[in-house]
Each structure stands twice: as C-alpha cells, then as structure tokens.
Length: 185
Image (cartoon, rainbow, N blue to C red; front, side, top):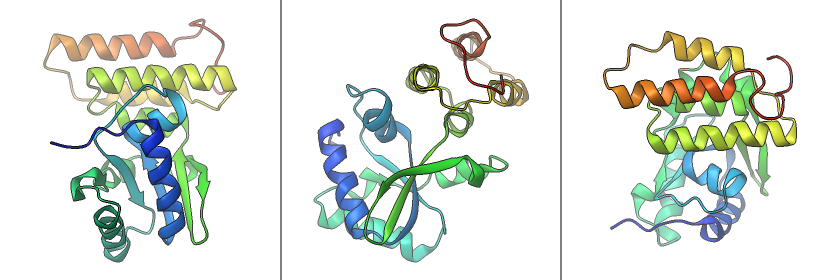
C-alpha cells in the first residue's frame, strides 16, 4: 500500500528534493495542492517533472525516491505529457523552491487548471476550486477565458457526472463568483 503523504511529510521531501536534485523541475498535482493551496490535502505521490526532460534527471528522481525510503511510484514524472500538451506552458511557471543546484517551479493558476481539466475527477475539481480561491485571495493571474475555451475544446463527456464537474468549474470561473479575478478575465 502506498504511503499517504500529508503536508508535513511533503515539506520534508520537497526540501530534500531541492537540496539533492540538479536542474529545473515543475511540481504539480496533489503534492502542490497540499503544499500551497489546501493543507489538509493528502496524496500518494509527488508529481515532479524535469523541465529538461532528460532521462538522466528522471533517473535522478527515482534514485532520490529510493534513498528517501519512498516507493518509486511515489515520485511521478508522467505529468510531463499533460504539461507539454499545453501551448506556451513554459511561460506559465513560477519559482516555488530553490536549492543549491535545483529550482522547483509551480504552475500558474492558468496552467494548473489547464492540466487538470483533461481528467477532471472529483478530486481534480476540488483542487481546481482551491486554485481559483487562491488566485482570487492572493490576486494571482488567472486567464479564465483561456481555461473556459480549453473546456469547450474537450471531447464531449460521456458521463453525467463529468458534465456536472465541467459545469461547476465553468460556474466557478464566471465573473461575479466570489472576489473578482485579476485581468485578463
């Protein structure tokens, strides 16, 4: 059974990752949510993507997992597929943590939502709503029009629950829902 990673353990792991890794990395998913958006969130893995995309860096990440006592599955670099499908993703990242030889970035709220909407499970929707709340609270840039356009471009959802989640996300992004989002909106 996979270890459940809460905020405290994730903080320890992220500090160790920043200390031991080389290069530029992007943290995504539930680990980012627990660390930045919702402290009660737990996850079973850390989605960490090498910006260089090199096999050496991926191997470095797996080596870190082994020496940190984590299962190899607890560090997940497969999210790079979803990130790299978003046009202009490189302009949608910001520094999150710095180490001696590593920089760990986080996605902007826009990129976070664009990566999450493809699957948009119940947990993804909760994470998206937490991100929207964070963007509003902290005046972070969120291009709601771009996210809504991407939602509109998704293949038709086959199940009613998926349609409800998409509708809930559209509603949360709509003008006048809670504090105003910064421009462009």
